[in-house]
Length: 203
Image (cartoon, rainbow, N blue to C red; front, side, top):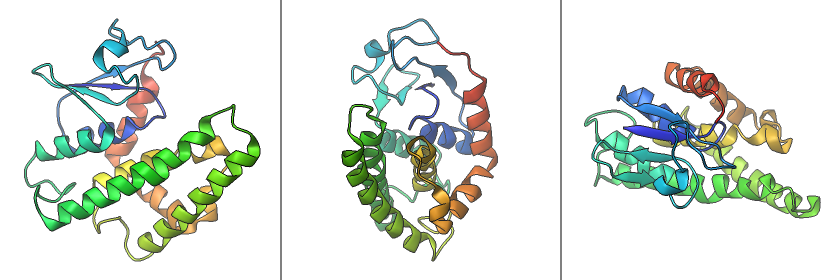
């Protein structure tokens, strides 16, 4: 398998999962501006949507969208603890968390990256995010991980919360979330994924 990624993007989430599961893969960096890849391809030929992550399977199939990729990967290793069995009620709960993170946190951060948005507009989006952070804090005050043990949703949430410094948002304003971030970052798979991405050369 090949994982096409860009540093400090949502592709860190499937990267963490690949390392958690011990799956063999090739990590290939892309330039988000030029869409050129480290293996000499035009990323738009791989994923016409133009954004990471993209997972190219050994049979040539291309899978995109982080929540779909990470569930696919988890299902490659039956009995792993990252995701409940497909078709179970617990799996539906996982999908509920993944959708919440995707629509409310991941997408909620997107306007804050836009330099063309006035600060007053960004303030509105920040306040909405802060309400979601309160909800997450309440959930994580009761347990260390979103579903009780470390799983797919935790790696995804960690990935998007790592963007907060770009927006001058201090995670320490939500102590429960700050502790969650420290807990996830201490995992060997997470440290290895971050180190591997930092070690790649720009395209």
